[in-house]
Image (tube, rainbow, N blue to C red):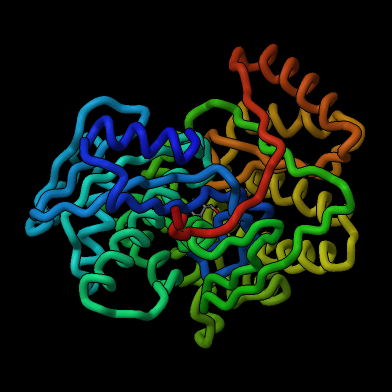
Length: 395
Ligand code: GLA
């Protein structure tokens, strides 16, 4: 919805006039390469999208939070003095979870009416939850600072970290920092080259020489098997412990080069753990090569690396599924596709492809038709528009 419509809806739900209404927004992201590396201290390369969560809100004079979403009926209420008590409620736990994490970090949460509008598809692997979390964090931190007369800018990296904490504790997903960081720190027409070990980052211009980024949604919801995700994470930890016995100075898989891995891979007996680690270490190397290629205008190499990334996620990390593999295989059959891979956690959700501008229509028509024939699911396609990270929209 447009902001004007959202403000009208806010007033029809919560009453009053436009006075005191504020608007905050934060985007979803698409990861171009560097998957399942973030929680291993590795590299990622996501871009913030135009699709976003928008919050229209107004402070209240009491201790209540009242939450409403444009696509859901009913209002959820929470007491700001008892924010820890709402874990597991049907809807609103991300929002209240973030408010709780901020209060634990010393922010002064104020009562508010809040209307949420999401344009990031839910469960599609484009970080709809990070968009909700980061916009909520920014909103509450801004109001807290104002209440306490604190004039400094909001530290968006701190917001990303608090949002990640809420995801761990409220959604039960032991996620890395990529999604929240991209939502907080993204910039239109750029992707973020982020070192997840120390959060050093660089905004890299997305100069694709006229090629387009197409996101293809399998419309198979990634029941982000929180359990599967957490299982992969602990397999990586197991692998790292073994390699560390030979290289005690290493602090995470992200510290280990492909050469070092080759040298000590034989120490890992468990074949599954070996494949998981091989994915992470090879993926890290691919990110570095991909950024080099992009900076040199070599989009063909960038695309090849995306293809290799998908193959590794399919064969070694085993987080793709029939729908993701079908979407990627059909994409790769189209002339003018330079690379195609799954994006996000996997097990469903979206793929990302780099496509010559002249092939976009053919891509959407043919991949759409063939994917639907093979899976029985109607897919959705988005020609990607990148956007800025979380911010207040000044009315
Ligand atoms: C999810 C998590 C991220 C990251 C990706 C996989 O999106 O939230 O932290 O681990 O999966 O790369």
